[in-house]
Image (cartoon, rainbow, N blue to C red; front, side, top):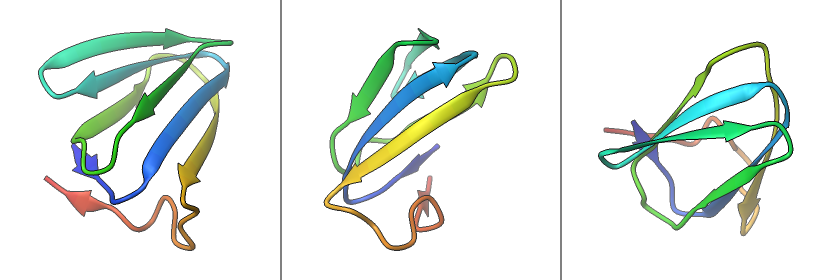
Amino acid sequence: MHQHEEIEHIIVYSGKIKVKNGDEDIIVDYGQSIAFEPFTPHKIEMLEDSWLIGITIPSSKNYPGKLKEE
């Protein structure tokens, strides 16, 4: 699990991922997206080969390297 100070949007361009958002597991398939508010603990697991687009608002120079591990 990690968190960061920016809003984060993850768009699944291809493949399928499992997102752990707090105690909830969410499956996000190609063409779908998910967003996290700042400081929301979350974890992303690839369920198959996947391409993701990650956007942080405001932009983070170190994204995704600037993470606070839980």
